[in-house]
Image 1 (cartoon, rainbow, N blue to C red):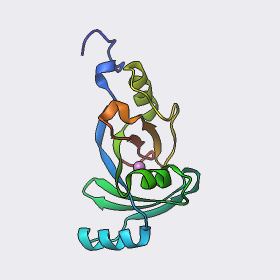
Image 2 (cartoon, rainbow, N blue to C red; image 1 turned 45 degrees about the horizontal axis):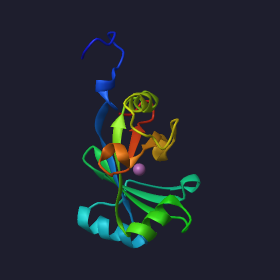
Image 3 (tube, rainbow, N blue to C red; image 1 turned 180 degrees about the vertical axis):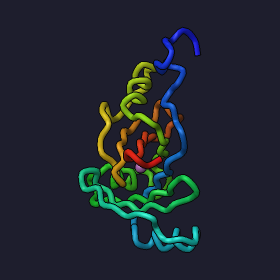
Length: 152
Ligand code: CO
């Protein structure tokens, strides 16, 4: 790993992804989307939450160690509302699970990858998250997700 001091992550370590946390999918009508996914995946949502500060209502379906996250906008003038207006329903972002969001942000900035959130902030399920600009990931909005302490 080059000449970095032992134990110190270098730029080549990137975000240090330890898993795919979730794929976020923007939907217009959360209830009907939940019914479609409940039927297709054969299980009910594992978690539901309204993140008012983000302007989203979400439902999480567990798939192995990861989630499918259905996202509906709480209004038109929200990030997901504007996405739906511009692009329609579909994949909105990819969430990578990392052990330390703050360290991942630092490493991305050192690599010149633009971040949306300069600092970690609260996500759903008690997670800590930060969004990264699509420019660094082939046009896909990326979310870094750190599980609550005591979970993996
Ligand atoms: Co997400």
